[in-house]
Picture 1 (tube, rainbow, N blue to C red):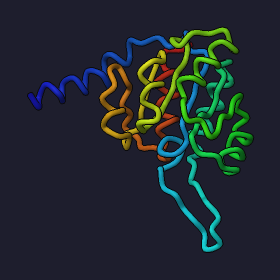
Picture 2: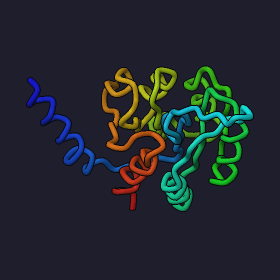
Picture 3: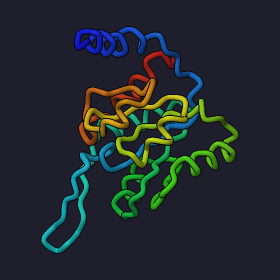
Length: 178
């Protein structure tokens, strides 16, 4: 049984992924903590909250935008740090303090006149589960919780959040885009 699990994982990574065409993706969404960051909460002596972002992920966001794919952040947190990262990356949407991500995604579909199948989303924890289970292309970082990793058809990435997972997902999406 263990060999079968290994074979399935290798097939998903090297065979099935290569045959996917993601030209239908019109909107890319990402969570923050555990995806764009390493899920760590850093505090200065003065109580300032700090987050570590990966510049490779930022270049990936730029690549999506250059293809005309809209980008957005959906997070349950509400911080100025995330707002500053959003502005720096020149993304289209920022939603902070979101408790039900799926409701928000359905609203975005109406606003953008797209369907769920035209959305790519990367998340890592149980608050992302419903969205990841219902959108077109779902991915999770290596350090995602097991419940998320076990969503049918989710792309399990080899990189952890804050360590280029978003960029890895974007490269998969763009591999067969042109």
